[in-house]
Length: 395
Image 1 (cartoon, rainbow, N blue to C red):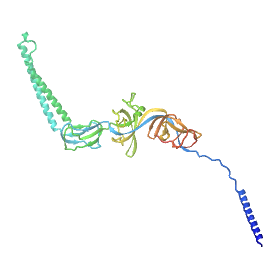
Image 2 (cartoon, rainbow, N blue to C red; image 1 turned 45 degrees about the horizontal axis):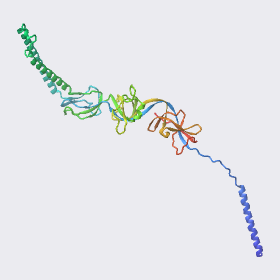
Image 3 (cartoon, rainbow, N blue to C red; image 1 turned 90 degrees about the horizontal axis):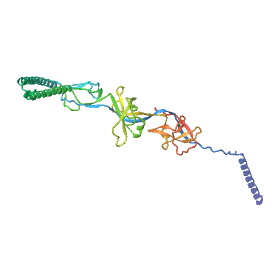
């Protein structure tokens, strides 16, 4: 084959291969499925919501404090002597009743003092009778001598009647009787009796110990009543009555005291009785005093020194709603999601905020879905996808 024919053959073969490749590409393109245009779906932001429940509820003002006794005294003898008796209850934590003899001091010296004082009184009474007889005799003698002498008058002079001596004897008798009374009082003071039902906080005395008057032997407190001083902001006092501090008459607001004792959650009933005399100079808070009667009537008791939580029941609001703190924005705005999933701004009236709880007095109604989750970007009227939460237990 000549070179010319060979070149023509190669050219024809090359063109045939190119045509075959083009035909294959066309067939492949025709067999490929056509892509359909789809409408892009925008995902809605998910928010957590809480369904509102309104009810006539009282504003609850919460605070904390330490239980203190209403009465607490130091047990100090008023006479000196040897301790001859100590009651079994006179120990740290011991319990006693009013009138119980807690301690006795050797009384013999004081009995002797009473005997001596009585003898002095008897002697002074004898001297008084003798002086009165002498005065009566002097008066009789005067009238017999000067009965008809008008110049002498009707009444004898005081010196004739021995009036100064009589007054001296009377004064001595009064002093001796005072000494007897003091001796009897000192004898009575050899017995130290409990002035109330109570318990022993601290004691430092032993049998046979010589004690001096005015020396502290023990500290005891009454179990009839206990008090808790609760520091509160001045603004919160408008919700409940504090006798002698807020306007109004009648008893103070009721309160519930809660604490964990011996592994149990316990509660006691109390009442606001007063406010302490001065505001706290550092915190500017008012210390409201809540009293609990018979704190040791239950077992376990409301023990002195226990740190407790106090719930004071304030004024009632007809349609109160309670929402989490996270639901409140800009002071008085909440986000509410309607049935169409549209988020709306809602202005509310906040009665009180305590911790993570907001008490709303107006602006919300039953069934409202309040947003409790946070969002970076939010606008009034935006569409959202609400996820309801179960209502929290707010008891």
